[in-house]
Amino acid sequence: MEILKTLSHYVIVFAVGGALCVVAQILIDKTKLTPARILVSYVTAGVILGAVGIYGPFADFAGAGATVPLLGFGNTIAKGIREEVDSRGLLGALTGGLTAASAGIAAAMVFGYLSALIFNGKRKK
Amino acid sequence: MPQKGIITLPTPVRFVAAASVGGAEEEAGPLGAFLDVNDVGGDDKFGTSSWEAAEGEMQRRALTTALGKAKLTEHDIDGVFAGDLQNQCVGSNYGLLDFDIPYFGLYGACSTCAEALILSSVYCSGLMTGPVAAVASSHNCAAERQFRYPIEYGGQRAPTAQWTVTGAGAFILSNDAEASLPMITDVLPGRTVDRGINDLNNMGAAMAPAAIDTLKRYFDETGRSPDSFDMIVTGDLGAEGTHILREFMASLGVDISAVHEDCGLLIYDVDGGDKHAGGSGCGCSATVLAASILPRMGLPTVMPAPEGKRLHDVLFMATGALMSPASVWQGNNIPGICHLVHIVGGDA
Image (cartoon, rainbow over all chains, first blue to last red; front, side, top):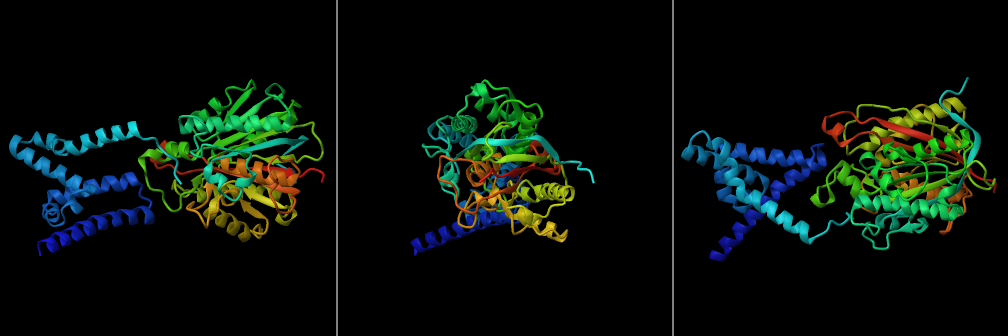
């Protein structure tokens, strides 16, 4: 039974993460929004949903399906700011976001750099 | 009625040679067998270390091949008119660096091939110079970085976006050549036209009004009708722009659908491949003209000659979308332009 529970959790994570990507794909195909705007809207939406307290419970339910997409990045920023404001006062509004997101940002830079060292760009087909 | 826009060349200028260079996608397309040069590495780098350098190398090879076919050297050429899609025309600047030829760098977006042919033929005919050259190129990966995102970013393409051709074409023109060779008799320089399109992924719609403007002026001034031409070929309107052009011309009572072709739809197997709305870029019309159209007008070719009826009277109309990345970011409209070159086949 334990394994069934784990499996169903995986299905939920997969379906939720996939559904968030489907929405973005529809935005690319059906609107004139550029990928950069969609990306920024997702992060901003995550900040707002996190700030009003919706994204936290949603992330508890959907796990990585909610935290890995860019909405989750926005939620992390909102959460970080709230915690930092609680512990350090108003200055936390400026420092909390990047502190909470620092692992993600540093990882993107380090792995991006390593990939650029190892691989060469290839033409599209 | 006096002719206002059309420039009739004092002496017709003939194509002495043409050469085409294409990347892997172009080699795999319907015109692949007719391209003179392709990248043996298959990675579209043409032996260089960057996409930008590869575009310059394509121009170098195109002009070298064309000179070889014409049995001329760089010292015989009195001027080269060249352009590409990179910032400040560096594709042409670097690619043609090795040639000791007076150089004019052009930017006409995807209309560059026709712009170069107009300026070089008028220069050659008006000043009675020796042979001149026209070169145009585009590289898919360099253009993606220039206008959208670097290839390495892995951004998604919109379904209406056209596919920038990796290709280059070079042409040698002379006012003193055999009568069997195809010639430019008259040209109609385009005007910039803005009809309010600001979508980078729908350049066909931005360029079609310019093609309509140029074609309508040509018909009005000459009094000729579409069926008196063997082919009216636009540069890279793609599926969307082709539809707009044909529909609008038909609404003016001029049905061009029987003789109209679009280089963007000729160069790729648009229905079979993932090329969305068709090919675009300076290299698109340049390679199609060099590899497919001129050989059918009497220009000798080294590669197998394309099939299809012999063409005698052709309107070559390369279209361009005149934007920069910054102009698009700032929300400006994308003006279009369409330059027309009237090519008449050599004596059969």
